[in-house]
Image (tube, rainbow, N blue to C red; front, side, top):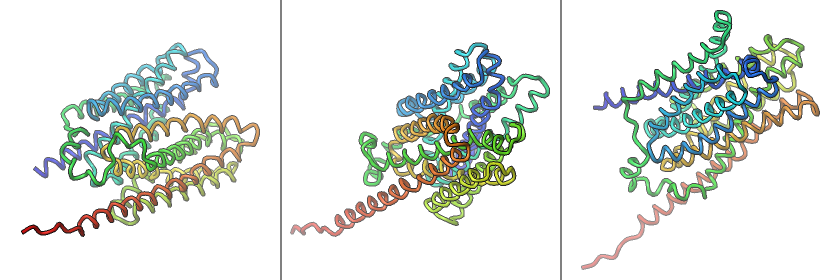
Length: 419
């Protein structure tokens, strides 16, 4: 029985891994194919960039409704829906011949990604509660693998067929394989877990009806928002910054982004092993990651014209970025285990909001303060994550101590002996 349960857990992990690889391929491809998408739809490149905004809005919308649907139908149904939606959007995006169709395709893709993120976070918390931090780090590395593979597939596809459609289809194919494997798997629902463990968990979890009143939730949403704003802002502008500062072509500067994603993937894989072996605690790892990514980001901002330094520092930025997102999600999911849909929705909506705002603000500031100062913004934003993180951990300790003291007092109260 135990062996069968472990095999089921392992298969679910591999399915979720495929889902994130598919998401990495599909969500990254619109960036390098934007000139082709603009040509197909007959709009200038700057106007075509609104497709990214459409995708971000779709992501926020998807996250909002995914929480409701997960509570109603369970995370498995939402996960499968998200994978189907992303596969369909990947087929539609390179074939869009009207700009309105491209915006709709990217909006739909964002919805699918929102479904995927919420349902995967819930699934991991329900199935891998004993290794939550380690599992989330490993899983989120899959997105980095997809982001790394996507440009390579695209380059090969364009050389052979002069058409980007096959690269998008590869992402859809990986997602479809995951869907087929997921059909026969059992994933527990939040409602069932509540009924089975209501008495056991009553004193250590927060009821879903009151979770939105908890300061811890909003502090964690702030952490996620700040981090994602820093990651997306840095990732969107690093190639342009290196190209302009070093006076080299975009083609020569593009590997800087590859180094970023490579570093992020390695950082998450290594972070999972560090947690597995107990080398440092989850909290210490988060502080190291925040400080390391901020220092590395400032190095890029100071020396954007030095190609070797920029490439190396970008890899370090990604490496330290790696454990932050899964680490914060693991802490939030563990603390609010009986309000997973609500918590995931709040955190990821915060992420989607800053993903829209920070890169746009950086672009507007470039003509006024220069690319060097603009590239320092993600480093500063990431460093500020340490403030709500410290407050969150202090509140957690205080809450746990209060509960422990109350429990001890209850044990010390002796009932009178009736004879």
